[in-house]
Length: 448
Ligand SMILES: C[S@@+](CC[C@H](N)C(=O)[O-])C[C@H]1O[C@@H](n2cnc3c(N)ncnc32)[C@H](O)[C@@H]1O
View 1 (cartoon, rainbow, N blue to C red):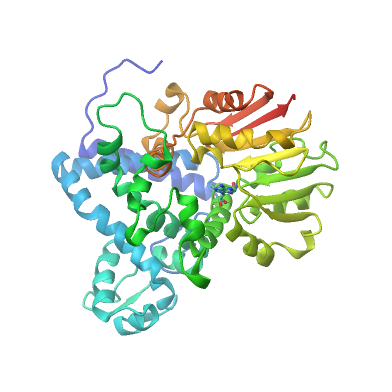
View 2 (cartoon, rainbow, N blue to C red):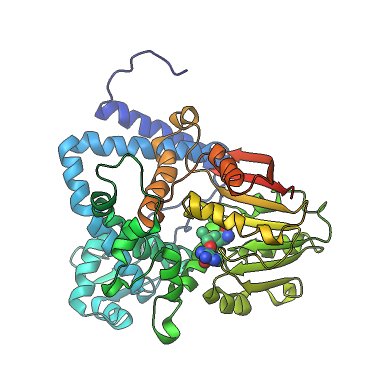
């Protein structure tokens, strides 16, 4: 139970005091952990190498206070006006900088003129200048002097020049998922108004409205789009980017240990493992290295195959192979363990259960499904005690799932139900969840 004591309303000075307090606490934690500080300059580290002790939580509290300060300093109306005015131009500008690789048009330790950036990006000088004019307001690049017609890097733009994974993330989130999200109100007008139930149909998503012909092509869902967009050699370029994005996310959320600790892999012995929708096998590198007895087959869509063949470590290929397989087709490999990591949260219940049902023909008694996914929504009591900025990780993903797939982020209990709905012979033998990482690991054993 929270305190019933009435808190006085926040003011500019009360929030400023919180900001100072959190900034001091964060500095102390980072210093104690000997973490190199970041700056706004190009030679800054591109991120905090670690967030020791309580620093992650303090950082999120600081973010909440900064957002309150934005509202209090501008007022309720103008903070909304200013947000609406800049939010979409900010997104469009970052997307342009990223798509046309402004990042590598400017040397990390020098400057580049508008003409030099235009040459690198293959865009007209006027477009370059106008894009950079807005970019510097977001602290992507800076002018050496206020009237310069050249730019230098800031820490933010330099991070994108140095880290191709971050670049892949911007591509995926802004270029692939944002356009459908802008059509969410239209999708709700067409498919939700006046209904008591939310549509779960793939034919009634904002994504479908955005991709039902015209320049965005005709695709049922994001996977079809990223797999097939592009002509000739360019085809699959979005999937190739997505593979980089997923590998980056793995490092960002440090999920390697989640996979390695998911079950007792050593006790599994000489097991055959299938990593369903495993992308180009980034999770399987550490798994195969740590457990030399495992034989792993990575399954994913066709455009992923050449990336696996080119990039997967050659010395592990005798034990880790790739096989093109559609999640909805009957599973051809009778394995001991199936990994399903970050797959089902992209799909509504009908498709999620269909994916689990498609495994059934291959399942032998005792076979296990190791399910690792995102718990976008915790128990409401648990969620209420978290900073808004932490809850927003889950709620933002949830809104994205609504727009793209008519899917939704689920609490742990719903994941158990999905297995039950798919087939009563799946016995959920263990569930581990961590509300701070938003990840859950569930093990289901086939009792067929
Ligand atoms: C969110 S990613 C997860 C990748 C990986 N399991 C991980 O945790 O990093 C979802 C993956 O499912 C794959 N996928 C989507 N639809 C599929 C389908 N119908 N059949 C096979 N794979 C599919 C995508 O290509 C993508 O690699």
